[in-house]
Length: 120
Image (cartoon, rainbow, N blue to C red):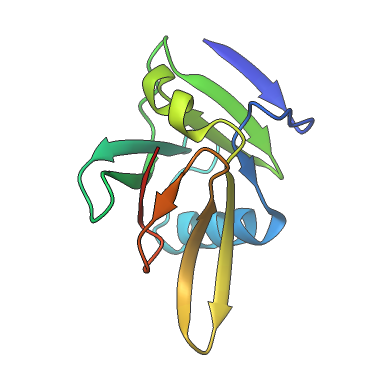
C-alpha cells in the first residue's frame, strides 16, 4: 500500500476542496469515526457508457489499494480502477440544476449526459 499526501501528481485522483468539505460533512452527519473512514473511489462495469463511477465511505482498506490524502480526506482506489481514473478530478457541485459529486476524467472518450458513466 502506498500513500501520497497533498501534492497530487497527474497520475493521482484529485479531490477538490469543495468535495472534501462535503465528504467531511457526510462523515459528521453519519457520526462515523473520521480517523478511520476512507473515501473509496473506483469504477465498475455498467452504466450507459460502459463504466460507472463508485464513491463509498469505508473503513476497509486492502494492501493493494493506492491511498491519496488531500484536504484532510484519505481516498483509496484499487489498482484496476486507478488505470481508468488516473488524473481524474472529483468535485462537488451544488447548483440549481443538481447537487452531487462530479467526475472530470481525462481518460474518458465519451460519457453519458448524467456524468455517472463513461467509456475509454
